[in-house]
Length: 313
Ligand code: BDR
Ligand code: CA
Image (tube, rainbow, N blue to C red):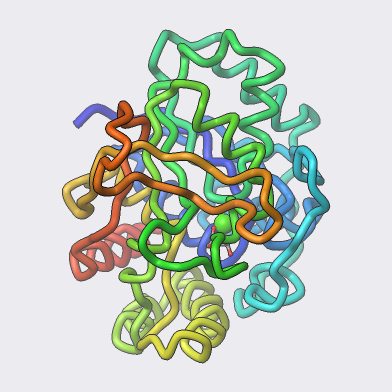
């Protein structure tokens, strides 16, 4: 498999943090060109500093971290401290970062990096609201042919939403941005709740992180202990769903996942169903498919990959 050059667009977030660590631990498969941050799980000042904390935890203070949009395109920011805690990465217990935040805006970084690249060479991985990526596409549509694929975490297809009955958090926070990105024409792969709700951090899997007995293992153990609580209580699951690392695992080993190419649309008008990802799973409208949507995974293989990669850090 050829190595993928990625821009990781995130809002850490405990599960974003694990996704960053997985990407940084997978040097032979993934070249992280930069990490761009957006307001989402917590406000921007925390997502950008958390991204730097996580890079330092991985021993990668050389990674460029950029701050991007502090608000969605058109709507008021909704955050999720009730899941992630006040800091966004509660449970990690990490010091303030010493590495500098890049001066450039995340959107400028995305635009400049894509413009300088070959056609179809950059994979963009949004694992938070898609505000930065949409802004980059609107500001410089010339970047669109440079992007090989969007692989995002977001949405809910047959599963119901986690933020409203209809909508998943990342799409709910900035549905207009998600629609811009989806409709750009760039190949679009989505990891909705249908698949991430099967990637559960069960007590045994949590213990495997802790057993790594390293700063990374301890931080992941602490973060996921904290993160697990909310979903285990709400859904009665045997562990919390590890949403965002599914995106990175898909880049490394797509065979872990299965899904379907379908036509997808995003609700941006109705307040009742705002941010709903409407996928024509049974092709009732016979429209040309515009998204590959995963709905299942081999969860043991996923966690095996994850723990073995984190052991490298
Ligand atoms: C998504 O929202 C956030 O809470 C997580 O980081 C993930 O990206 C799940 O709905
Ligand atoms: Ca996220």
